[in-house]
Length: 205
Image (tube, rainbow, N blue to C red; front, side):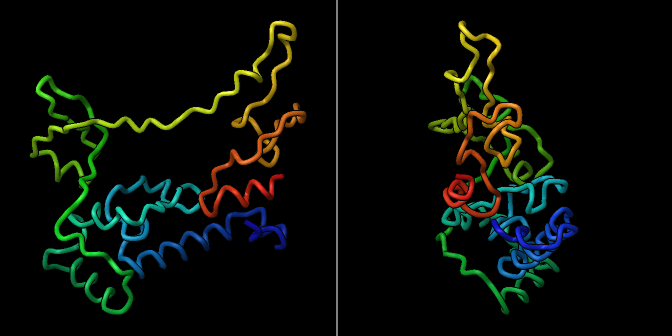
């Protein structure tokens, strides 16, 4: 949070520090778990242009990772398994035994047929290759669609149709207010990639 507060402006205004984080974090993740996508995250990769600490939100749900990664960790004899075995013999984040139980990761669903089977988009990723030959008929479908920030009370009123307050996604001054409308501020609406929201909200306040 304060890593660029007391540094030379040339460093503060450049990406040098983020490039350092980029290689440092990737090395630590690979050294401790064998993959650079996240701690024991062997599947669900993101595009190369987004694979950077300044653009991703790290997975903090570590309890489910062993169940998702189980089918994708190196297990067949070959260079990948030998490298994994050599590295894990030196440093390895503990991986709980799932007793063979796993959570299947699937691509975005394309459609649900009349018989209840799900067809997935081919995202050219290992999870599609693994599931494309299976007939998947779920018992229940949960739509985790997230949420949308809405501030209807800040919209222009009938009495003052020209007055338009800023919204959280328009706050371009420290993520708190819109430069041309400083009378309304938003505290705690910035979602950091590293760190927690509460201390960031305290710093904004």
